[in-house]
Image (cartoon, rainbow, N blue to C red):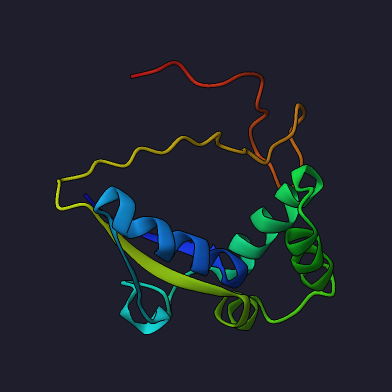
Amino acid sequence: MIRAALFACAMLVPLVARASMHEIAYDITSFDALDGWAEDDHQAALDVFLNTCPDMNDPDWLSLCALAQQKPDARQFFELFFRPVLISDGKPALFTGYFEPELNGSLHPTDRFRYPLYREPEAS
């Protein structure tokens, strides 16, 4: 299984130490090695990170949250405080994700929204 993940710097040592116990390889790589990293929407990722901060209790994460709230350059923030890690146990992997679409709209026609949005469209 091969996975690319970002781990906080403080988390790297324990993860690498556990790797040999479970026959899983944790290899630190560069951000440049991540497909699409340069083109990604780093600010959107930082916004998501900030939205998770209220659920974090560990002092290391709280420090990062405090720094993130100072509105840093998003790409630099991730490149400075996180490291991409390639995780492999030699087996194929499947990742799934879930999202909730957000629609901008109005219940009444306006200059910006020509058609009112009353409900989610029927599935086709």
